[in-house]
Length: 169
Image 1 (spheres, helix red, strand yellow):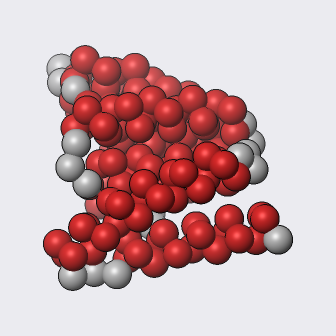
Image 2 (image 1 turned 120 degrees about the horizontal axis):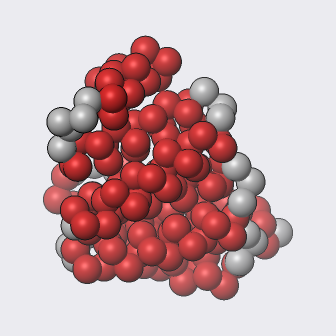
């Protein structure tokens, strides 16, 4: 399912994720991945309500699997809440995502957690939080860019700074 979804073929991916859930012998890790995948497929189909339900289930199932699993599920949940027009629920998911990513440490998971939190803060027009989070985002983006030789992290941060500037203008 993941390959099809990443290729932009979410409708074709969904049955593969569902097959995992239909398998009574599926491992807990596989089940949480299937719910994440179905949530992303629902987002791609413009169905944020289904995306929220699947993402919420993925997050619940990910909790005993560790913070790496939880981070991805919470990111999908925050995205689903944003798509559903519920910035408060998205903020709750993003706050939990920040906490889980901080427990992992490093720059990779925290970068993506902070990036989501910035987006949600901007959605909520919480400019003070957005400014503070953008500073943290830059603190993670710079080392990731240096480690990978890619500018994607700095570019994503710049886009969010631009969005903040537009909100304050």
